[in-house]
Image 1: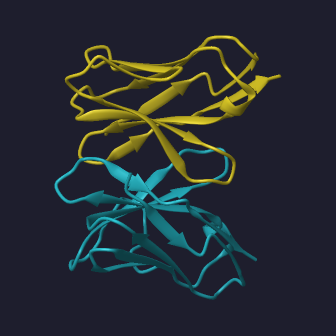
Image 2: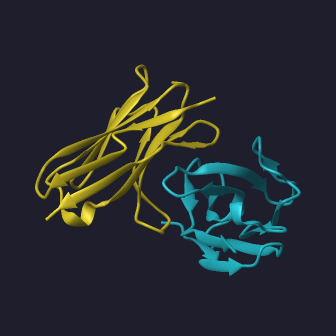
Amino acid sequence: KQEVTQIPAALSVPEGENLVLNCSFTDSAIYNLQWFRQDPGKGLTSLLLIQSSQREQTSGRLNASLDKSSGRSTLYIAASQPGDSATYLCAVIGGQFYFGTGTSLTVIP
Amino acid sequence: GAVVSQHPSWVICKSGTSVKIECRSLDFQATTMFWYRQFPKQSLMLMATSNEGSKATYEQGVEKDKFLINHASLTLSTLTVTSAHPEDSSFYICSGNDRGQETQYFGPGTRLLVL
């Protein structure tokens, strides 16, 4: 069964810093990988979707990479802002969505 | 992008009662809908997968007689929590697949509190 782990579980950084969130998965036979943002008590907002044939995707200050062979993905956030504070979830897609444990990010003004 | 709505967004009920949560795809036809549960500070766990017009497929450990899922149309799926207990208190999120696409579109979630 696919297991998805995210490190760190929580992260607190001062505004303006660049940061990296990590996602690892145990089964490399995946279709796609998707990063989401979840604000407290809210649903999911899709950030980036990386197809299995792709290495990375970029959207604004966000860049996500995928290395299927090593079972890893990273989400890079440039010039962090307080509005980026949220929980970030990665989901490995292989027949169904397997969600990671999440990283709770706090950006301090 | 495609929009999925859930109703209600919040529900508080007494132990032993049943609660129905609706999930609607507003601008696409969802041949498959998924129901997830999220406990505080935990990730989303898939409960069941439903295809329009057929019975839902439940994940291991999810009681199908307790969590009744109906997917009667391409735009509506319902989850009924029967005889709810405090341990059923959770955040329930649905999602839907647009026809032939891999992407799932997620609803805003329903928070259930059972007293």
